[in-house]
Amino acid sequence: MDLFVSDLHLCPSRPPATDLFLEFLAGPATRAGALYILGDLFEYWAGDDDLDDPFSQTICSALHALADQGTFIGFIPGNRDFLVGTAFAATAGLTLLDDGCVRNIGGTPTLLMHGDVLCTDDQEYQRFRATIRSAAWRQEFLARPLPERKAEIEALRRRSEAEKQRKPMILMDAHPDAVADALRAAGCRRLIHGHTHRPARHEHLVDGKTCERWVLGDWYQGGDYLYCDETGCHRVPLAVP
Image 1 (cartoon, rainbow, N blue to C red):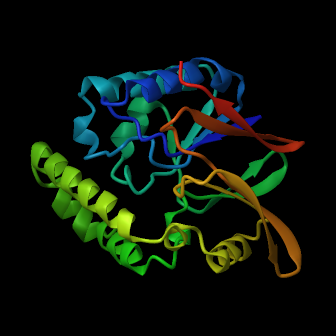
Image 2: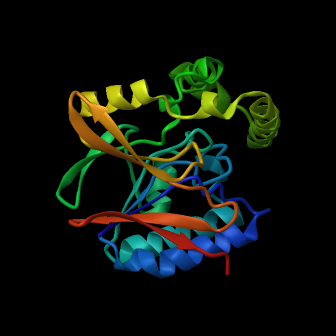
């Protein structure tokens, strides 16, 4: 059995979500062969030189404890924590995965993504994403002092939230053509992703074949996870303790 979560947006100002995640790691996750975190584990990540922060240490220690029990943990960085690096991975005991990787899940080749690249109608965001994901931007940004980076990220978050208010929801959702292209390129008939905060199961007809797309929910008002085995995928809600 493999488990999937995304969009937890953990931060010190939201202790209920952190407590729920720690309970999840010490409970359901211990019974899984693998846990896949499909992006936005953190509200933001300013760089691996922030690993000494007590909050970061708490999350990394809990993840490493799960890995020490034999659970594989795979992590695809999201749009909020794409700056996680190898130091974070080692501290948390997890494996960094490429966005758009294919894994054998319960005997079914499954495409795993964070999901933001599927929102192709939001061209403004896609241009911004291309800029901040470039090697040059990353190198320049990480060279700045940590407090300066955190201040800039906070400003970007506030601007992003304001921009979301003026954009129609459909603009920020996964486009069916982008979904079909991704499934076709990967040669898969199942896709699991997060990012849109719209948990659901969708069916797509791609080249005459019925494919399924599972969208993971966020952890703002409770949380949920997806578990998949030979029988298929099933959503499990989690209540805030």
